[in-house]
Structures are given as C-alpha cells and as structure tokens.
Length: 309
Image 1: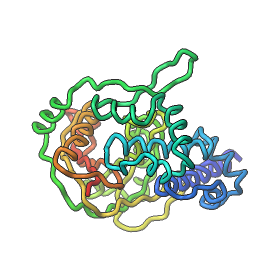
Image 2: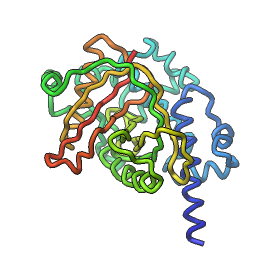
Image 3: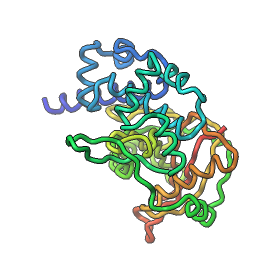
Image 4: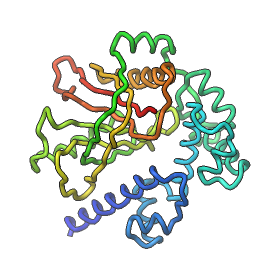
C-alpha cells in the first residue's frame, strides 16, 4: 500500500513539474485554472489542491509572483519596453494601477524606486522581518564592488561568445536555495546510474537556474539538476526531460571553489552589458566538467552560460 502511495506522489510531482515548466514558458499567455488543469490532466478542483500542496502557493499566487518577478527583472536589466504600462499589460495585469499595487505589496516599494535602487546600488534582494512579524522583500548591498567583480573576472577567465549546441537531458527539479541543488543531483545519479546513462567524461552534469537571487526569495527559487543523454530514454517518477536549444551564449570557463559561484555569476552578469550584448530568453546554466566534491582542492571545473543576442 505504501509503495502505491509513493508511486502516486511521484506521479503528482511529475505532473505538477510539467505545469510549472509550462507556466515558465507562457507567462504572457492566458493561464486559466482550466488550462493548467488540462496540462496536468487533472480536474480543476483536484489540480488546485495538489498544486497548492506541492508548491506551497495557489496557482494564482504562483503565476502572479512569477509575472511580477519577470517585470522586476526587466526593470533591473533595462532590456524591456520603456513603458511600465506595456510590461504590465503584457504580463496579464488589467491596469497600471493594479500592477503598481501588486508590485508594491510584493517588494515594499514602487516599481520606479525598485528600478533606481537596483541599477545604481547593484543590490540583491533579501528578506527582513517587518514590525508585524511578516517577511518583506528588501535590498541589501553586496560586500564587493562592481570594479572588484570586473577585476576578479579578468583574472579568472576570458569570457567567450559561442554558438552552443543543443543539450538533451533528463532532470529532477529543485525548489529552494541554489546551493542545495546537490540533493537533486544525488537523486538523479541514483536513477541514471543503474540505467547505464552515465558515461563520464562524455556525459555532462548541468544545472539550469530559472530565477535570479536578486529578484526571488531563495526558498522559492527553482532549478533543474540535469544529466546529458545521447538517445531518448523513458523517464518515470520525478525524473523528467529538458532540452536547452542551441543558441548564442556568453560562456565563462572557471575553476571555482564552492563559495565562489555567486561571485562568478555576478561578474558574468556584469560582463554582458559592459560588452554591448543584450540578454535573451533562454536557459541560464552551468556545465560541469568534473565533480568538485571529489577534487583534492575542492575545485569545480565549470562553464557558466548566459543566453545573449
């Protein structure tokens, strides 16, 4: 009986992961409860209950947060339409007033103030305790300056612009702080190994990051632990499939210690606009060329790949 219950839970996880991926790629579409329930092959009532239990937010809460974060990211990068009204309507808000209210409720400041502070302070988003005991989003400065990041990057790697090939992979999604994605990798290795899918060094481990730590509460950030595959395979349970299409990326090849990944990502994010490139929708990911946990010096040999146009 417990085995059947466990199989049912894995089936639910697989179906909800499918919906989460669908939302990620269709934030500017009509995402009605019925539509999402159809994607999951559940009744709307059943889908709402399961989604809320697994994700910790109702479908509407999740979609609203995702849309606000998408607009916030566009404001920080300065690569979206100049008109905030255009952005608000593009992502499903009926009026600029409803968007402004939702944005301020979420970040504790207006969209224009958020944009100004984000650009000029090079800050990240963190949580602070408010007077009424609720968590609110606030800005915290980085401990290192922009110039320090530029100098650090110059000493560590030469960033190259490359046309990267398509990557076909199996994955397990992770929800929570990015440094804990190792838990998902351990599960994936346990699944892929007995199926003969691990052929190192040809096989690559890849991490995809769907959120920016500057925008999203770390407990709600989503990522995928992936392993490349050469041929199509049948997946089950919480293991799914994901493809990174071929495309143009800024690629930095690093040898990093565990606590240097954030600095590497921040320096790469600065490099893109500094060299006249614009970001595009795509998969921000890392390609690992070794297992840093087994390296005598604790070094991860990794490519950080940022989609550009």
